[in-house]
Amino acid sequence: MSEVTEKIKAELLIRCEKAKNDTDFDIWNDHIKYVVENALDLAKKYGADIEIVELRGIIT
Image (cartoon, rainbow, N blue to C red; front, side, top):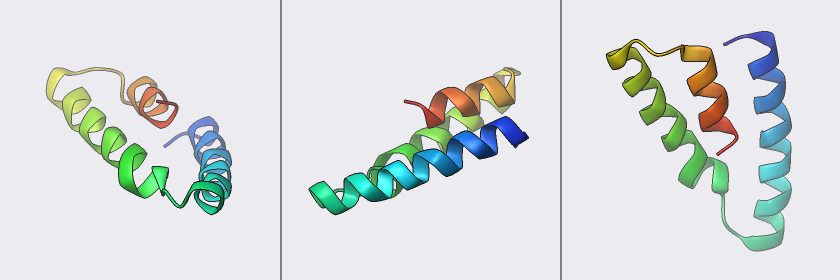
């Protein structure tokens, strides 16, 4: 994971934690993490740019 991706992920985790406190839904652990995992599997399978796919999965 690149430095840019790490920074975006860190900020998103902070925002997801705040949203979880407001809504009682853990969007990171119940949704985004699975989107990213599936997207990366498909990217590897089809030869897509891993960093681009990961970033897109994170900001879904």
